[in-house]
Image 1 (spheres, helix red, strand yellow):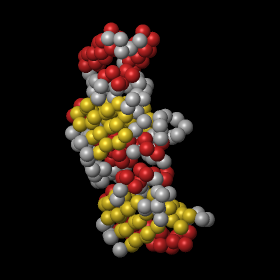
Image 2: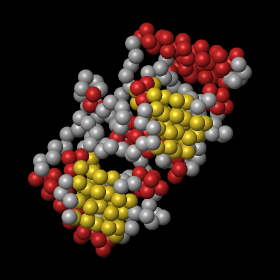
Image 3: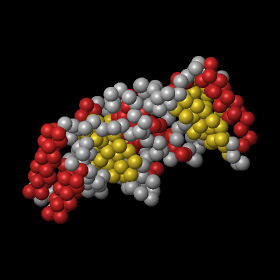
Image 4: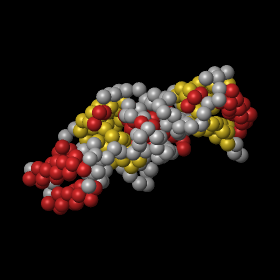
Length: 294
């Protein structure tokens, strides 16, 4: 057993699995504490490195492309401190960190673990049900459907449409961008009918606009990951060839379906306008955005 215990967390390697447990210290980001313990099988690892620095070092695991739904959902956009595959190491424990890294590298070599992309997720993602309250509303996922309940501060168009319920079978992909504290983020659920919609997140009833607490909004990545883990693996797209892009490529509906979706979206907007939910200005702006998207 190779193990290193730090304030930032604990890594324990038993020859087949790296068990990563986040620390409980207040310096450990809320996202990592909420994501919890991660068991990384050896076959999911592409490499490991220890990066020494003058005061502290960093122990990092690099996973094989396509092995982890968290990395697929977040597209490598998680802030460094929130990365569960990174451990801050005190300078006096650098030798232990190097030992742990070397043990993992030796096991990768002995087991001849390939570095090529995987054809299935090797990590399960967060358990369900999972629910997160964000600045734009509460998003929940029970394993079969997504539900969005809008906040009082959500755009009135969203609130007028009521709770949004989306079945997993209707989803094409999940798009996630973190709220950096300087720029807003979003969590968007792309369905076959909305794949061409370019509505801004604050107006899109299939998207959460992340503009509040960056620390709290980061937790929406839990839902994005749980849903992504239950969508077809990226290797099944594009004729079975793995896409090198971090985000899945959306399926493109046939031209006839494309036209039907456009008409349906315009009818929905027209009904909202007639019912007084959308003002003339909002209707014109939203209609233009939908037309641009199609």
